[in-house]
Length: 169
Picture 1 (cartoon, rainbow, N blue to C red):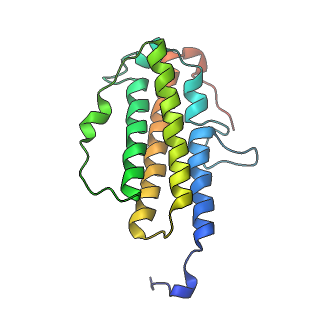
Picture 2 (picture 1 turned 135 degrees about the horizontal axis):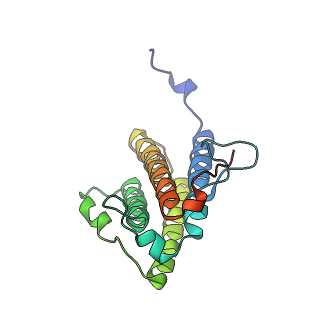
């Protein structure tokens, strides 16, 4: 495939619009008119909002919903740091240290995840030049977050059997 010339580059505004749309949909759910995901209207926040600390702390094959939420928050924070210039390596094992919470800790973690998500939106909006590294990091945030959305949604079905057959499309 032939490389594009400079005049055929993607406009920053177009890239940003699509990145923000996918991040928004991953965390807040899709708009009414379509979805990048099979289950319309579902995102990380709506998936975890109705779950209690006991449900998210349940051990499901060696992990828990809260472990995925903490890892996702940690990941968002580190990738924003990389987009903003961080070069030091990350100890990713630190992102899996929490696997149970009480009610108060669960509320704090959900608020922290929302703050990390909002920080991603801010960071993306403030990127002056979208070079290959920054585009790759933004795409990694979307792909990684989508993976954890799927994992969390499947685990939520295990802790809430009444939700097993529900789909929204």
